[in-house]
Length: 324
Length: 293
Image 1 (cartoon, one colour):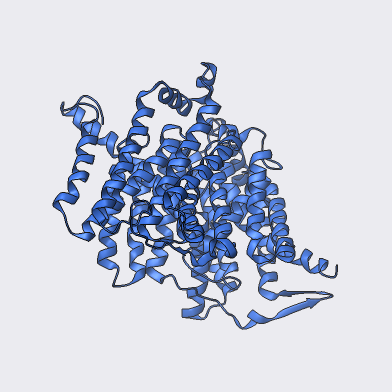
Image 2 (spheres, chains in turn blue, orange):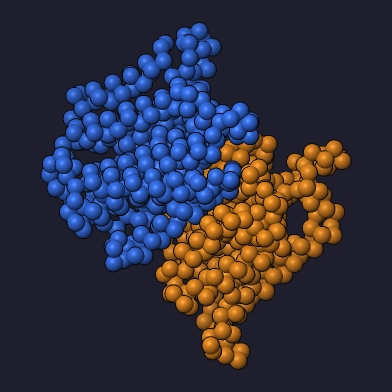
């Protein structure tokens, strides 16, 4: 199997989806799979390829969501402009965090990122005059592409599909390019990479900033699609964990992994929500119990993730050359 | 200026409780080199234990405290054997995600079993206020503080003088050398984890009469505990005490000066500042953050 074939199959199937399926519920599931897959891929740029595991990425997602929602509701600007502003803010924040926390490794870096997202959560939920505080912001629906008021779910599928393909290509670049190899060297052994003349520090900062910017894009589109921004959701540690979880289940530092992880997680969540949604809100917690256990089991038994595991399987049976 | 004595008293009382949560976290990190991201969930479980004992059996939280010690010791050993032991020699990332997964699972087990409602433990002495000079404080706060100090002191004595404590410190200093000296490091880790969980579970029981009980109640305390332990130097117990007092002071004075709504921003900013300026904290080893250990 040639490199890139599995991805072509995956995105091809997603593109065919709206032609075959008309059911709004299923299309909604497809959109969320692609959107969460894209977000997990954005996380993967820093967490998987650069080895900078963050549990504060919700901060960048929230910056994107809030920029799009606030510029739209306060100044009636297009969400595309909001998206750009969100990307700018996140890039700057990512550069600052990346630069300042460069010395921190392992648990220290995780703690620093959590603290950063908590600061934004507090600001967003308490600064009532500007952000509407803990009530959140309903995003008005204004029809048209420029205002991202797309009523037809099929339109959304192609929009988030384009985003997904973009994220896949970014990750492919990190897998094949000189810069990607340098990043892998930094991830595996920073001191060795430094001694070989790799600009480890700059690479890590750029990777974190790029990851932040891409996460903000996902956040802005998510806000427009869902139509409501709640500070306790978009800045939560839970959401940050979710990005990481999809990437880990699918395969850290693989281009298709985050999307496969998202297929599993999003499908399970959508299914259980539909099953238990009416019975009792508490039962929705079941899928989070499964997430938690899955996380513990995956890092222990399949640390290479689904993509790596499938690749091993195929190779053992002599079916494939390389992992996707 | 008349508020100063009250601010001092509030700081010390709050600091005592933070210390009890933080010493468990810092002990586990010091010996096992693991940041326990599920630490807050054991606070939550302690709070629920106190709540259910109070609601169903009308047991006073301070009586439950005694019962909670063996319960959390066993829970600690069980969670170590099931979850932590297999990953104790793995990379930081594996350990981080293992404890994060444990945290999510426990939080949501509580949500499914006991719903997300806020629950309260209100013993008869709940509203008793003690006045001393110009200061006033709640009885539950004093008891929580006293027990927290007692616990922390006992833990210090245990680590300093008991054989098991010496073995734990030896393992903390050099796990390979400890193993070469015939120390069963696996048992040491199990014991460390269990003791850390006992501390934090007891803290949860003590906090139940003071704060609402709900599935994510642990998060607010554990975030504070991270600030405390990094401030004092991850793994350093005396540092955790000092860190607790500083964070409590920031919180109390911040609430007084700029209002309760923004006080959390202060200690997170303090946290970020410490991580940037001196990530090793007051007493931690310089450069530890670069090794990630």
